[in-house]
Length: 358
Image (cartoon, rainbow, N blue to C red; front, side, top):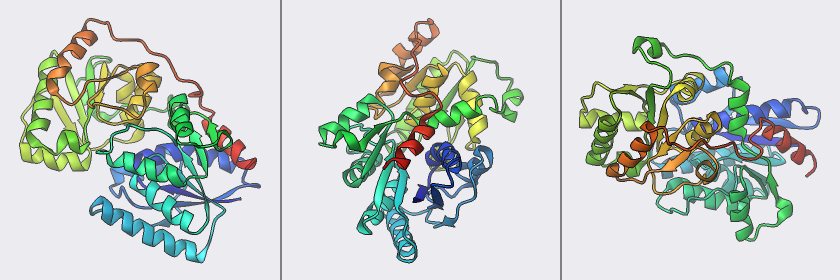
């Protein structure tokens, strides 16, 4: 079996690393071609992950980064179509909900290539999120659905997907975390800033609903700072958010804005923080596994298991909502949470086992 593995954005790299390792153990039966679409082209958002997670260098790089989402989509589709016209795989494997996932799955299906979607079936039911469109389109043309939770299974069954096409395997992002838990690396800023274990916050924000409106972003940051009880707030900044921060010219002694950190450095901070504050999805999964309180600055989530089972809570998108959550945190009343089923480090092995039986 020949597989195209599609990666393009930071979350993909974390998810593909253990799958590639599991495939390599069966390389007499499965071969793969690693395709980097270049959706994330900044080294801090891409290159470092290949080095740290032991991912082989891509066989092909489309260098399709930059531009609007539609421009990226079109560039990726044209490049992948050109590649498939020369060399067809048996299967196209896509991950998560990024632009590259949707773009390559569409092209593959037009060539009658089977599509396997890792992390299929997750839904926020919020069509204002670009990722939700990517999920819906990808799942509508997927052949094999590999899921992270019972919630995803239910979503797919509600769409009429047959049980024999749904494979409940767990979470490859947690595979990567478990493998690297003892390799997490203390960033230089930890000592430089005099950080103390469990006495600082980690903050990430990148969603347009939170960062595009300058006053809203400013109000969020000021509210978080005012509620932090003088705890430092480490803010590894997505390049897109960074450009907006320069415009609002926020002055703060507690909010420490940094460039994106490497995988090992970032998760070192998450593991040792008092709380994570984010509008991401994947980080809520890592926080749940690590048992770290997590506030998600959104009205909905495609990962309800992090709330129903894990350590995550939705705060909504109004900064004034945060007060009760900080009060709960500082009063040591935050829920303990537990680890969802199959988040055991063996997800990638299960995926490869199913692939061999298709």
